[in-house]
Every structure is written in C-alpha cells, then in structure tokens.
Image (tube, rainbow, N blue to C red; front, side, top):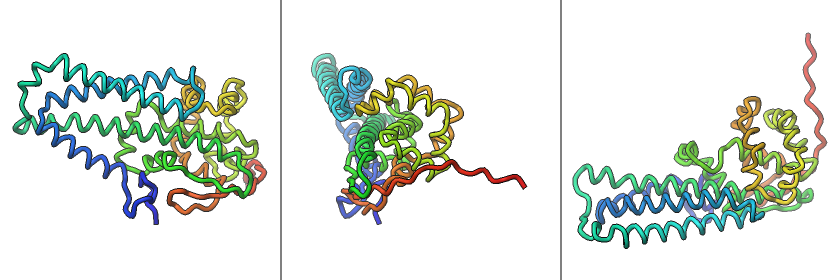
Length: 303
C-alpha cells in the first residue's frame, strides 16, 4: 500500500516524506554551519531570504504578463535563484570578505544552537516551494482532467502529487500555517471554481458531499462563478491569477464558508467524486465516472 505522504509517489521502494527529507537536510546544514562558521551561514541565509522575497514578488506580478501557471512558477523560481546567487556572492565575496576571512567555525553550545537557524529557515523555504509547486501543478492538472470524457483515463503527475503529499505530512502541515503563498481555503475555493469548466461537475460534487453542496450553493460561490473576469480566468487556465484575485481572497475568508473550506480536501474528496480507480503509484491512473444529474437533498418531513 502506498504512502500518501511519499513525495516520489512510489517511484522508490521506500517512501520519501517531506519530514524525512527535512530531517536529513537539517542535520547536514546545521553541521556545515557549525564546522565552516556560523557567520558565513547566517549571511548566506540572509541572501536566501532575499532570493525568496524576489520569487514572492515575481509570483505576485507575473500573472499580469504571463498566463500559464507552469511558466509563472518557472519564472518565479528562476528569479529567486538568480537573486539568491547574486546576493550571496555580493555579501560573502565582496562586502564581508575581509571579515569572513578571519572568522573561524562556531564552537560551544551557543555555536551549536545558532547553527540550527540557517537549517530551519532553509527547511521552511523548501516546504513553501514544494507546497506552492504542488498546488499550482495540481490546479493545472485538475483543470485539464475535469473536462475529460466519461471513461477516459487520466494521470496524476509527480509535481501535482506534491500537494497531496505535503497535506499528508505532519511537519509540512505545521509549516503551512506560515505559508505566504497559498492558504488552504483559497486553494479549495479555486478547485471548486475550476470544476465549473464542466457544467455537470459541480452538481456531481455536491451530490457526493454535504460540505461541497454547502459551498457550491452558497451566494458567495454563485457570485464568483458568474463574475465575467473570474470566468475568463477559469476558461483560459490562468489559475495563479485566480488564486490572487481579490474576490477569491475575500471569499475564502467569508465566515459562512471558512469552516466548510477547511473541512474539504481539494485533492481527495473533489477528485474522488469525479474519478474512479487509481493504483496509488506514479503515474496514478483513474477514469472519469459517468455524470450524474444533481438533485437537491430532500429535507426530512417534520413528525
């Protein structure tokens, strides 16, 4: 049986969760900081923060210039990587070279404690990157899969699986609380909006899940679904711009929807309502199940 938190989705004979990967990297980076000098690693961490800030800025601005979610992701990562390399070189090899040349490795308990800080920050950046990549790729894949014909096979890509894997990992869920890119409510709400690419899909989702029915039938959801600008973003597959749309952000914080959004697993319940089968390993193969017409749930008669 496959492990849902496996980032490689069954490619290797053993699972590779984010927690196990984070622990290995944490130990390596902390040891390097202690051995090579905490000062060097601290300023390298500052450079990493500058790179992450650049990626965040580009991710927020790119949808106005680029429509493809995949392209926005690549451009944001490249911008962050280039900025990190440039900032690291400028700080370590130009501004602080005289100081760092005389600095020795950390020592004692304080040095050991300080050496954990760069490792912890890198793990947080890594978690944010995995989750953001998985979210964007899962939205793009879901948008393509929701319109397939009944009985047609679909495949879950490895990068799209990262969202499911991160949602199943305890450490990743903890770090998600301070994720600046994607909050669970927005991602779920966008998942419902994407499902409207197939007119029959929302009813099928509502028929399968009471929480889904409450969201789909809410006035907020109806308003979003009928908004011309949001409909254009959905139809053209501009899902990053959809995530950042002010009305989507506001709706995800709506008190009448917040509890339902937090209770829905966009990668599980939504897709399980539309597809059947699946090997649990990469590639995950499923089939679109026959469309069912949705009928409102009947209210039990009063005795």
